[in-house]
Image (tube, rainbow, N blue to C red; front, top):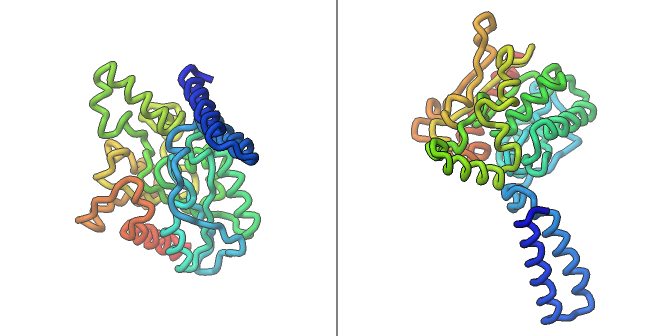
Length: 300
């Protein structure tokens, strides 16, 4: 335990002892023990993993694909989020007949991307087994898109994917600090940003930066995996995805340009100014996702 965490732990014990003296109930020992356990297990977690999750989404394992909706959809949340972030989009897609699933993974997506990719891979295998489908459609928000692409490329997951939609995903790596990137030009500022990123997101925050081995690996030999088509949705007003063009994927010169649809939200809705975390629940983005799914379904 670091010196800082040790100090926090000692203060927690001191507060607990003071509570016991003020209120020596027989059942307080159990309550105090639980408080210490919660503190000890959370003290080293990034802040985003300790915040109360938003939204509610529950898997319905009775859901099955249909002729018009032939693939299950798996929604992969972003850093610090949970499957609950898909509450609105999941409900909308289900109302249109899609079988929709969403995992929680990676301690609110703060663990290394490689570990998270293995977890979602096991979950996707379960979805395929239960539904009897041969392929899925992936929808990933922010880090969720990077995790999905890493799973596709590392574990051969691309063979199980018909189409992938990424939403505000740093596909080519974002700049450290996003809109705070100018601070990295100063040595002391760079150190501040590094500490902030680690405390907020854990190691996975650094894995999404431009030039990181994960990002370079996903670009090696081209952005696209065999047989998969893609939709990338981005916005010019996202402070975390900088420059905003890194949200888009590129097609090799000798490949079919129709394999990738790169879409600016503002091209569809010129007055839209949508925050990064709201991209998964904004009705205009959900409309774009639904239209892209319908397009892919028509293509078969």
